[in-house]
Image (cartoon, rainbow, N blue to C red):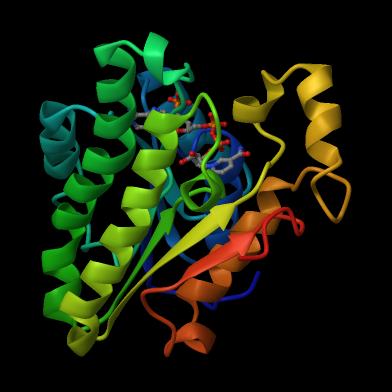
Length: 248
Ligand code: NAP
């Protein structure tokens, strides 16, 4: 086991599956203590058990980033631990619909989870980072925050919003040794993309230069880099990891 992140506390939201799970393991396998969150007690317990089985440091916690009360409870649950040095705002949802059919609920749920959730989790961690004069905040945005996508006005607005947030906060906290960056994944093999039909999948591949979907670990590697000392002079950036689907 490497000890790149020895004595670092890393908070990963949405660590029960997909990209968040890969990120959580990436840090834990390099010596970090990982706080991995899930929306249910059962999944949180599973995160804890899996860390234990693999003899990695970390535990699972219940957290719904769309609910202020859940965030407050989470804050109480972690109060005896040291403050996180590294925050990965990964949890996110989609609720696709064409704009004319989009219900208020579909708009609000996505904006509230992806954007307001990130805002609240960042506030929760920022004070500790300012005190320590060190911090890494990495927000998982999306290719569609850069390109747009029909049927995803809510999701792409939230993901573009994350990029604006990243840039503004990077300017606010840079002098305190805190970097703030975003990663914009293309289409990655997770539950989120499992729902795409074979037809959509085939047509997607025609637009991806590397002719395949990405793996969660390929996102985790870039997050790892941004959190490391090697990326100490990178802030306010959005790193695309999309197999060449969008090169802007
Ligand atoms: P996923 O497989 O659907 O997993 C989503 C994760 O977020 C789960 O751990 C889930 O927890 C958690 N989550 C959902 N709603 C939450 C809430 N209200 N509060 C706290 N946690 C919540 O998603 P993914 O594909 O790994 O995506 C991870 C991130 O990458 C998302 O922000 C997504 O928008 C972004 N992204 C994904 C892709 C892709 O192709 N997959 C592309 C671009 C960007 P539970 O297990 O408890 O439900």
